[in-house]
Image (tube, rainbow, N blue to C red; front, side, top):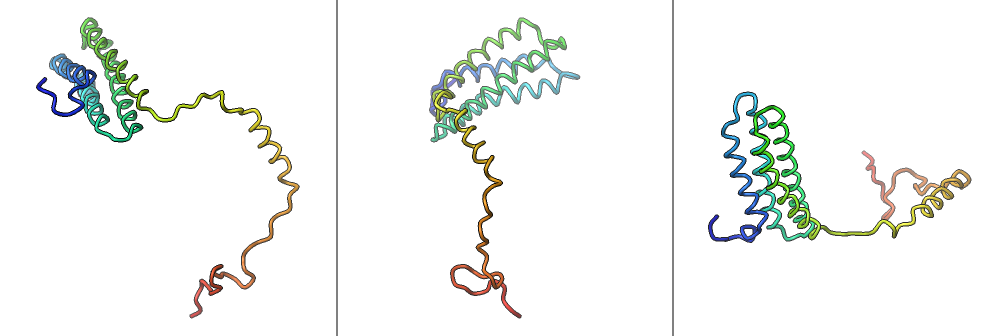
Length: 172
């Protein structure tokens, strides 16, 4: 790659994902016929990884960054699954697939850490006492049928605007 111009150019995960795309394109040159649909899907998913990394890294909101890194991570998993399909259909050598998956594993690991770093609110589930909230809700529902209905707030003479007393429906 050339000299970094944008911030995402400096990211190791971006450079690694560009390397993965190049390798996927190289391997996919031999795929045709019945395997062209898997090849096309694989190349789209592979390209999606660096594209989402770059777009996410350009976001100002930390939650948006995390979301795009998660999308890139999902595309990496999709690539791994497509490789499994290609190996199962004798379109891709197992050795080549394992080498590409090692690249994907590094990419996924890096993206996981990045997404967790930028992800927003984290609250431990132990802070919530669900048992007490449920009991309180049940007690209110149990006695709901015993309450008298509230009187209607609608005006006696039909549809009226509450603020100025003029009718909403105009006579003709």
